[in-house]
Image (tube, rainbow, N blue to C red; front, side):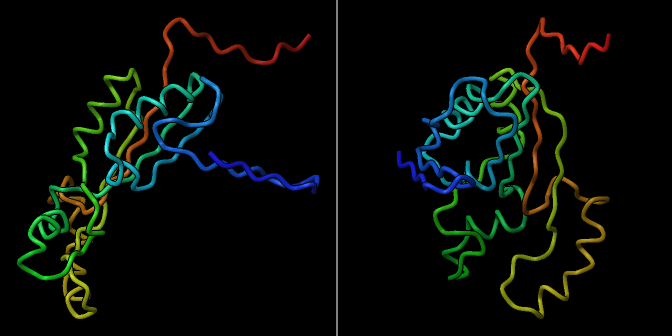
Length: 168
């Protein structure tokens, strides 16, 4: 853990920490964003568990990830045949349904989700242009096969009542 402080009044603190040991108090954070994080950690469930710990009641978690059930995920698994990775070589994509199930196990409620990027997994402009039609048809014809997904979950606490401002 590293903390940087400045003597300036408007300075911000920067914290560097492991994902499974966040330097925040329990129930102290309103929103946690995990952009393509679960693909690069040894224990994704431990990360989600730690995020659940620091989230306030009614706090949100936003997760983006690579979809292993997509054309991009298939090419990533077969990179030895193509000689090139289309996703980062170290990535270990987690399925959308697995991440949803792990969030539910932690007591988080799924608030929404969406897939995107349906084009061919290619590095060349020609093939990316050629597969433009797939973007338009992806949501309609094969919605769960997008190369990436976005997942939104909220921490619900049973027995909790939100109380607004009381005006006299």
